[in-house]
Amino acid sequence: MINRELPFELRSLIPILDTLSQIFGEKNFEFLLHDFRYPDSSLVYIRGKVTGREVGAPLTDRLWQIYQEQKDEAEDVINVRVRAREGNLINSSTVFVRNKEGKILGSLGINVDISAFQIVVDSLNELIVGITSNNHEGVDFARNVEEFLNDVLDQNLARKPKAYLSKDDRLKIVKELDKQGVFLIKGAVEEVAKRLGVTRFSVYNYLEELRK
Image 1 (tube, rainbow, N blue to C red):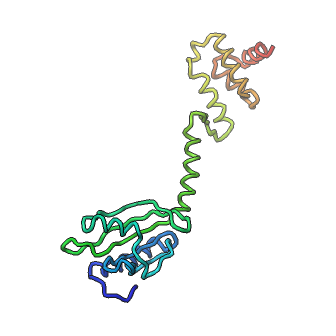
Image 2 (image 1 turned 30 degrees about the vertical axis):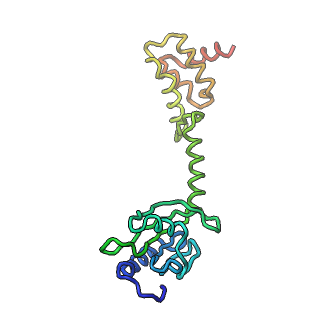
């Protein structure tokens, strides 16, 4: 901390900054306190190394401009994205500190280096766009062969109850199941026959008829 007598309103915030730095760490977070009475050396306390500044640094041009233009009417600035000289992306927030008369004495700042987070977010956004595009296909993640067979049969038999199936209907279903490779599964013929309400020999006959 700078060797300067601070107003109570500013001095009382130092333990809060210490606590915040202990909770969130100082790798990607920076907590700082400015004393506006000395704009050329306003930074009186800092925890973290996001911006690389040290105690005794001046007000940023952006913060000084806000204060000069709005004086004691200046409003807090929350979650402004800025680019540091080193190129890292920073989410910056400033809360103005006032005395009981409403005069601005300084500010409490929080800077978060979101460069690494942004890379992750961009990657996730690309993934989400791919997932939500119209080109994706529905997939049933069956846990075993029996589930896979049941899923395929359920999809193909959902159109009409088996009691109302004509021979042409059964031929179409068997043809679709054959295209999907169902009959390569052991026991598939018997299961299909049961679900269609016919004998397994009928299913073999359908297959023979379709494959001619």
